[in-house]
Image (cartoon, rainbow, N blue to C red):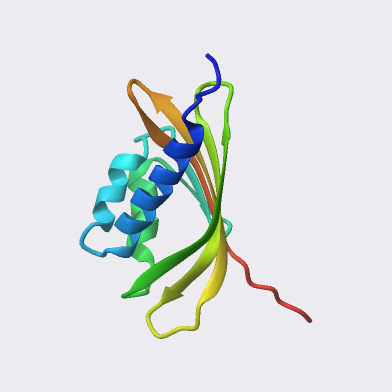
Length: 130
């Protein structure tokens, strides 16, 4: 396959869709349609999950009631299989907690005329000192 010339618009549109679904508790279950039943891998704060069911179980176990992602930057690169690599940095606010910086990386894998999230890595930017 060749590099996807629309990688930038695909990546930025995906980010907008992903976080609008995630931030709306009524829409969050629809994130399941973005993952693949078997081939999606997620690492969330060091905990790994594979497949749509396990990934959604992780999302459903999160303790916050409200969340809002404020995106600072989105960087996209085309991949040689037609996929898109996406790096996101920003801040998120949950419930009454202060905002925290985060980074998230996605690999979108082509499937027919669409994409699914093949890899999803999320980490809060917390720094602990002794």
